[in-house]
Length: 377
Image 1 (tube, rainbow, N blue to C red):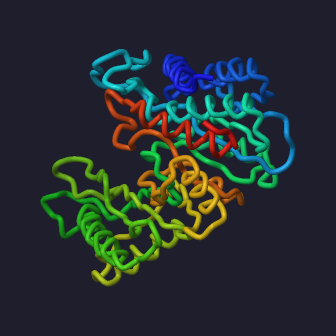
Image 2: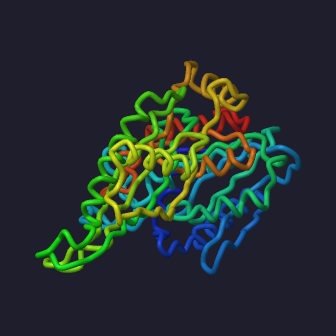
């Protein structure tokens, strides 16, 4: 089997299927993968998540704990001026360009090719492929996958996010709040008769900055410290009215174990240290995004296994590090499944205009996945 030709064809075909999220339309990609893998003798489970949206699982039929190679089928919309059509794979200078080439249809194509290689070589390693919908927004596909396939059925999971073929074992989460500062409106010519919500918001922003600095001493084996910052502000009704409301959007990046309430307590304590809000003013918090951090330990069983696969494939030690973006790792670790990230491409290319993945990176990923599945290449 020519693995290179196979994963190139898979990638080209997958890029041509527009799975921009929203709306997703991942069913078309799931159906394509099902058709491909059926030809190689795989058993197929298409799991409809919602109309037009589906996961696809391909297995060789073994029961019991299996290696799961997984990734997401959806991509972000292709905006901006591209040098080629974003939904037509274009190969130039040892790269494949197209929306999703890096994040993460390149990884999926390599996983599919590695599964074919393992099946044709008679691998004795039980495994399955699981490709999911809706990772880019709500993560509903992975939740559905983990509901259908219990932790007892998955020995280890490898998620094909673009890690530059490093083994990534942790990522910070994403929590976002709306902090609404309330005051009392009045005529701007007599500001003493009101309570200016924008002034209260200014005090709150200073408190957020102090709280962020307090996290600098936090230590984790691979992750940077947690962070929080004000990213948007909306306030004011008219240029001659003291505003009675101002809303600040706050972005928080939690480390494992941190929840929204932890950040709210930190902000409130910092605000108190700043002297609090003016009398007649108050603040309330509404969480609208809550993606927890995900991590496995350096010393965990899966890291030893993945590092061993890497050493067998490349005859050198693997780089083990943190992943700088949110992903589905946290869903696996919260469900009790040991998982790591490993895939071709750089996160710098993900979500970008003229997104691409290097073919040398794909070849390395293909070889690693083959080794994970017990196939010699």
